[in-house]
Amino acid sequence: MQGKVMAALDAGRGEVYVGEYEIHSSVYVVSREYLVTKAEFLQQARGWSVATPDALLFDVATAAGLSVALLPPISAGAVAGLGWRNLQRGEIVTPEQLEANYIRRTDAEMLERIGS
Image 1 (tube, rainbow, N blue to C red):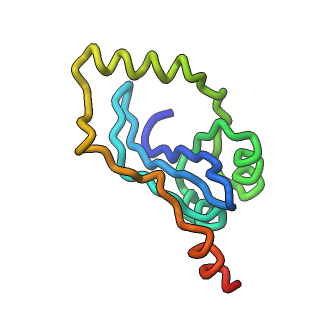
Image 2: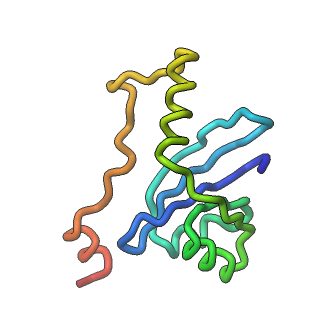
């Protein structure tokens, strides 16, 4: 895939982890990463090339008319290999530079949001 790509993973609770990327050859730039509801994802993904390893999310996105590719799941060993290559090239991030973008709303916030 080249150009603007949106990666999507089911986050549970009716939410989706989304990453927006600009991809050119083997170089990619992270535009932003965030958590949205499934409905918000389907709306925001219009006009993007979407990639996901999640078959259910693939089906929902396809039914919504999105341009979506189903990727094979990646193994923990493959992720470790990517990390090891980055370490060998000196591409590291200190703990202070990390962003905890995986933190989601509490159950109370979710219930307040839907009006329960």
